[in-house]
Amino acid sequence: MGRAFRTPLALAAAALLAAPLLTASSLTGTASAATAATAADTASSAEAADTPVYARLYNQGTGLCLAVPGADPPQGTKLVQWRCSTSASQYWALLPVADGYQVRNLGTGLCLAMGKDTKDKGATAIQWPCNGGDAADDAEQVWTHDDIDRLKNKNSQLCLAILGTATAEKTEAQQWDCGTNGDQQWLW
Image (cartoon, rainbow, N blue to C red; front, side, top):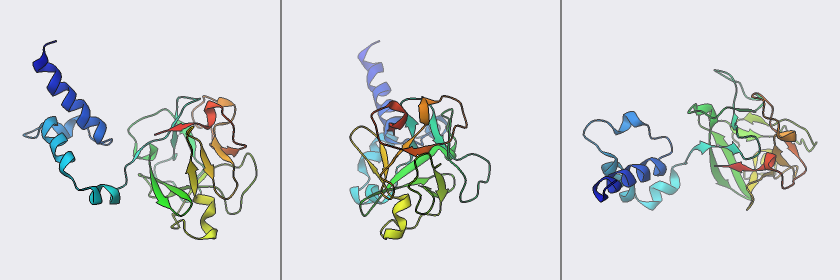
């Protein structure tokens, strides 16, 4: 492949990587991938800091993604793993709060949480209205993301896991003692 082909391909790849929700159909018409990349580069850092970036939460051990099941799931719905797709139910943003992050779902606008005051191993993760994360009452939906990609709950000090690295779809995400197994490693 000649040099003339590599540059447009590299620009298109950079544009797609810079915008996780960008689709092929949004690149049609008069705007090219290079134009999209240039526009993305000119956005101010203040705007970028205020705009959440949503991406799939991919479990390293199972190869599946964290998802909110159902077409119109209510608060309290248990979170599961599912085959990775472009469904909004699988896209999550890390939102900075005191002592960590809230993890908000794109499809529902609700946050990854453990039940109120739940510190039990094996408790299932749920979605719940985001509370702001600044009060002690919000600790069940505040998470830290560490250097080996674990999500640790502030309230329980346990990590989000797919126990036993189960690969079945609809397996519930639970909290468990933090370890180094892939079933607790969540990649963005």
